[in-house]
Length: 295
Image 1 (cartoon, rainbow, N blue to C red):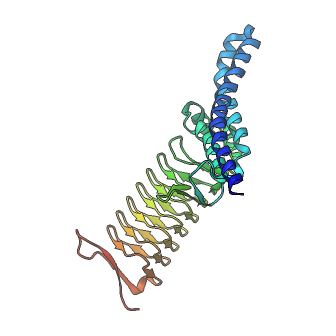
Image 2 (image 1 turned 120 degrees about the vertical axis):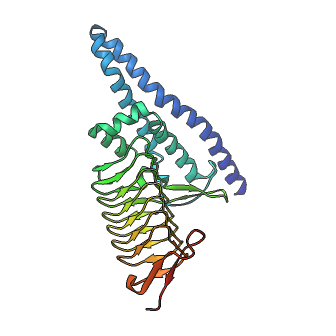
Image 3 (image 1 turned 45 degrees about the vertical axis):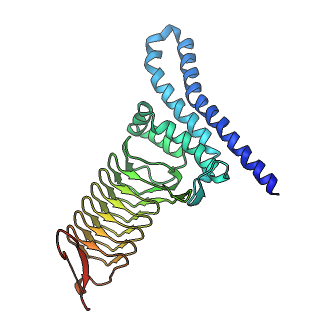
């Protein structure tokens, strides 16, 4: 049995090298062949054909990449995976990622896909996204693992923001989890969301923020510019975190909590009733903390 397992692993490594080359040839080659065919068939209408070639090439590029990704989408699921193409799940994740990034990094194709509604629908659906199509992202908004993204109506993700559905770990594994943006939620410029983040309706993350693994932001909550919300934090409804603040891992902030700019809240702090706490700066300029008062 160990020998068979080793042989299977080796086979996957060789298969990945071959398939990645074949996939790239198909993704680029088939659209090119189809464009040449259009020019040949429509020789009498060469000017019209030349105008249609970029559109045809782009659509064909997306369709070929998306169709090739279909057989690998089952592996785009939450979990921890060994970063080795000999591992079955990671093998398929890598091939799915190759198909998606071929589109994502091809800006002349990807930009029109985000600009034309029916092309956007085609692109996201064929790569496994199943949520609302009434959302906004930009060509330089980093997204991957489309089956793990859940956008509500009116969700907005600014340019150069990162929806990090996967994180590479130093122990050789990959952590993967979905990201949920409820209706009317907003992610600002250069903000970064880790795997497992959930934003309830109306929640807002301002520019330059970092939101840790599994953080939950309550309805109409607000994270100020350049703030850091660590792993597993829970923000209640209408909670407000000021600019340049730090919320330690595992902290719980009740509904209506207001954290001032520059404050540092220690990990695993519990604020169950905002009126029973005094959140203020302590030793400003060197260190800050959340100081709970007796209820």
